[in-house]
Length: 252
Image (cartoon, rainbow, N blue to C red; front, side, top):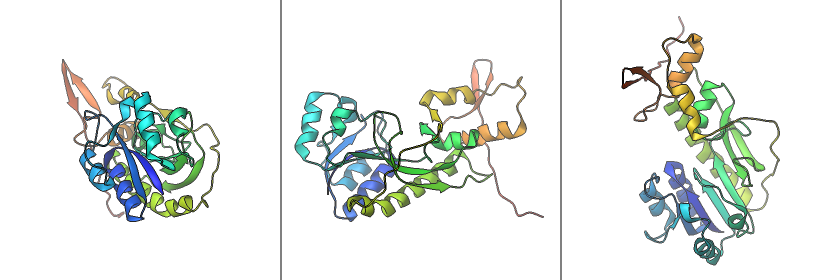
């Protein structure tokens, strides 16, 4: 199958490797601008696209980029950790539409930082492969899988679990999708949605506020993901960042 890959981050590189290992042809690659790009070199190497031939995600709405994508003659667009909306004029280029791999158990945790909000709000965690529509992570579900949130998980450890589960889900589901035998189920229920800036409301720890112990521990562990800054206390004009270490012990 001829694929255009819209990708960022380590999971994007892993999916590129998986597609090529299965004999699919990545005929186009769209990456974040360099200042927002993560694992760009790895994605390029895994995709087989020559450096310099990738397209700029920030220019997706420009006619020349749309024309360049159309010229690729791809059957499907695959989005992985991609931070830009795929609008209808782009999606219409692909006979088999665009699909997205999102590390959340939709409809829970649409949008940003599903690893954080599954801990803080105690919502179901998991991963979902779904069709792209006009909303943010609102399209029909192809397949999904739950991931357990352990009491000692941090934002970092849960992110790793979600990343691994997402790649496993893609590996298991892609052959069914490619063969036209994958399911398609509309999302149901209200779920939840968060923007990138929503973490600002939990990051500033107020020493004068009364927190339930579990609430505070969940915020601190959810925002523990070095080297990212995460939660903090304020001392004068300085921010004192807080990280926690949680260790599971055998019950006595």
